[in-house]
Image (cartoon, rainbow over all chains, first blue to last red; front, side):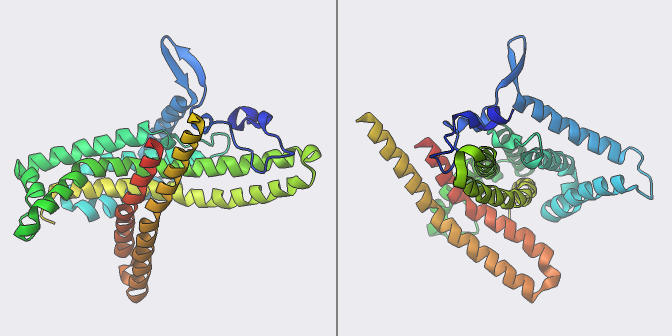
Length: 271
Length: 74
């Protein structure tokens, strides 16, 4: 398991300062566990289903009783749901925001669990560091805000973006081009890439620092004085580990917040 | 000699990403600095300011992210 994840066997502790895998893809393309017919089920797929299952289980067991005096567990789940509903959906989108609260809550909790897999012992793999999940969620948000924009404002949604009335006439075409480009291309792209890039960077740093630190300390006999370097890497890795907790929670929040902002810009386009 | 061209391309992509990160770095610094000033002046508005700060960071970050994507494409 240890060797499979970071390919420790190929590392020459006597010469190399950091033990890096031969190919970065080895850290992200996890091996197939078993097959169902033609479908190859890798560890990533299992983790995706595990994350979905955890979210459903948390919501079901947290809100099953719905007693007036909540248990501790119920209070935590309620405050999470309330946080997305009040602080994200209603504050950003407005009174209509309650309609989008279920989507935002589900997305927030799924991303939170998926991101926290990065630092969960024995899992140590953020499922959001594979582009499929951020891209899919960004596309769903994109479809929602474009659909809502056209349904609320008709064709004015598009014409207001291309020909904004609030801007001086001489600059309108330029602002229109920029807005068109940013609304329909950059928004979904940056939404997906932001989450993806943060988690990829975090996973990479954690694996390299903790992995090479562990290998140097493990092979104390071969590395000699160099295992002190390993101790430094490992300590630095633990610092990054604590930082990644913040990143994981923050990125889930920012993804949800920006989805709400994009939906808001379709519900009230004049702002 | 094909190998050296590949290495050169990789190095240029890396430099391009470094250059793309300069502007957003400065921009995020300005956003966060001003948000802290605002929170210090009006602590009761801290919640609103924090949300707006994250939004500002998210929009500023877009340029760095485009650089990150181009690094992989190049």
